[in-house]
Image (cartoon, rainbow over the protein chains, first blue to last red):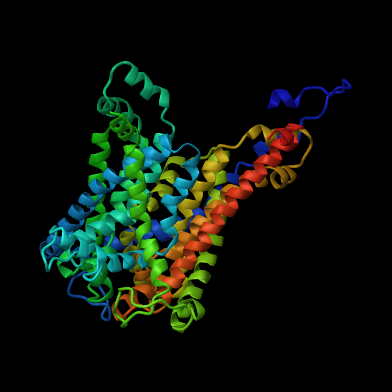
Length: 304
Length: 277
């Protein structure tokens, strides 16, 4: 740029450097640009996390009306875990099963859009995002209709004896897992698509020219090259799915409740803030541990 | 033999179309139920065709109030988050400064934290600070979780931009403000618009964080949540279908405009290109 700035004009007269060279004056500018947004995130994201940690150590005998004292009650954690470990385990179990299902569905979908769709690529991509245009809750309620005892799906499954004559789908773990899979599938597909789209088709041709079977081509070429998208997609799916409680509430029964249902009721119904905060903090730590272990094993840290 | 080869080549597409069917099934149900006259308040099954729900979408007036409130909150949160996020994106792409990696973590973390944790921690903050929950606490929360998405979206557009265009403008003696106004802004604008639309849809559809910080204020998702216990009015499906239709129209319109703009750009850059294409 500076080389260009000093090029004399056609008439041969040197020109004064254009204003671009005055950049140096704006030392403070980046901080001014960052300040409002960073302050907002600090005040309403970081500080609340500290407040949550503090609330999880409040004296459990306090209440909202009498006020809480910070007594560093670490005992809140084992107490909460003892009472609610089934819901805790269920959150990870359901989200894990949903993730496997979503991978089985999402990988072929992302691959087909990226490599096979040709000029229909953009249209199909819009089709993946489009369902998210309708409210999350309204879509989940639609599953209530689809899975209902009088619905065609249950009727069909009963006719082919996959379900007993009184068998149900609604209010079972199947419904909850199906809802989780459905609701977060686009989050898995989009990053995966972005990775697969950049995949050079000639590499696949080269592999098959060198007598690799389709399965081997997939395992040795396609899968490793799609790894960044796969990792990002898996995390974008797993994190919200573990913390979700809408599906368990609308499609399940208290027997399918996940940790989110417990936390929701601790904060909004039972008004037991220390316990709710302890569970919330445990959930975040558990997710962070899972994510960290996963990233270490997957061997990529560039997603972060 | 030929059948099996055809199958080998096309099974991926077949699976993909089935999965797309799975994704669209609930949308079809929502659209169908918007024409339903339910047999009872708690029934989720299709009963009888009617146009009444579309004729009187506001028959249950609290629902329309909730939609309106969601639009207001979405609008305020979108404006604030888009401004804050765009400024941050400019700083991150265009400037060097200390504390960059720490800031990146601060921007990344809200996208990786479960909504449940953000919602409960904000509630803990508001309660301990004695802040009354309601409309404004929802707006504050929505701005917080939208900002990161705006930063990421605008940043992507900005870092893919050709800096030489701005340099050319400055070399041609445009002032810094003129360069920004006439070159930089028009080039980044699609990214900013995309970020704003994303922010609005995130805000409009948010339930979990809102649920913890709303007090007695009812947004559309909060209304649906409450109604799921008492019985859902069929008009909810009208709103769901209408949202889907509006968003789809916006996407189609923007892709049409994009195509037209690209054609126009080619036409001005390469004389005679229009006659060829």
